[in-house]
Each structure stands twice: as structure tokens, then as C-alpha cells.
Image (tube, rainbow, N blue to C red; front, side, top):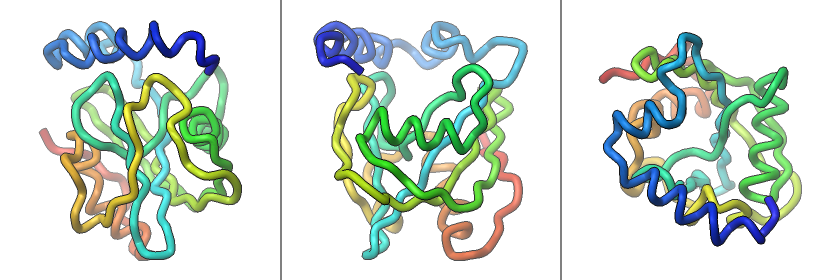
Length: 167
């Protein structure tokens, strides 16, 4: 993202983040007849800490990721999002699907390791990034709170199968 747009986009994302949840959902198009598809990464350091992001448009911390663009496959999206949002290249492990029927969203969650670059905030969509141990997640957003246990099991080699968050 070109830095010249950051002064305009970050306040806009913050404004969207202050809206009631229902308004955010309608505004971002989640109520469309189809499911939105996305990819996220659980990037883990050698000490077991996860790389989390805090978005400017919603409360809490989450795993980095984003929506599929055009005819992208989930792995391509995951790599692109890590490059665009964090300035890093990643190696991806086997994903597992997370279905959120309430918000009509299907996310492919990939275990990932950084192969080049040092993570940093590269887009106005993000407020900050940080490394946190999964046993002590700071103010997780709704999605991270619901998939964190499945992500832990998957990273430990236990396939959680299809994850369907509760509401």
C-alpha cells in the first residue's frame, strides 16, 4: 500500500471500527448471499509465541490474514496478505477450514513460518503487531477467541477437523 493513502484510510478504518457490529457487517458486505472466503496464518516463533495483529477497524487482536481476491487460491491469498500487511514471506503448512455461518465466512487457517523479512505494520488496516504466547492472548477478537484452541491443537499435530465457531 502506498503510504500517501495511510492518513486517509486509517481514520476511515477507525470510524468503521466504532460502528455497532451490525452496521459494520452490513457495510463490509458480509450479508451477501454467498460466503466470503479468506485465509489467515498462525505464525509461530521458536519460543511458541504467535504473531498477532490489531486491526484499525475492529476491536481486539487477531491472526493476520484477509479475503481472497478474484480467483486466488487460499495459499496465494495467505502469502499475499503476509507480504502486504506485514512485509514478510512465509512458508505455509497444511490448512484447516474455519466456517462461521453467522457471518457467512469460510477461512483457511494456515500454520506458517517466516522465511524472509521482519514483521512490521505495512498497511493502515493495522494499528499494531505483537508476539504473544497462546496461553496468554491479549484481548482476542471474537474470531481468535473461538479458533485459538483449534489452532493450538492443529499446530501440535492434532487435526481439529472442521471448526465451526459458536455464537
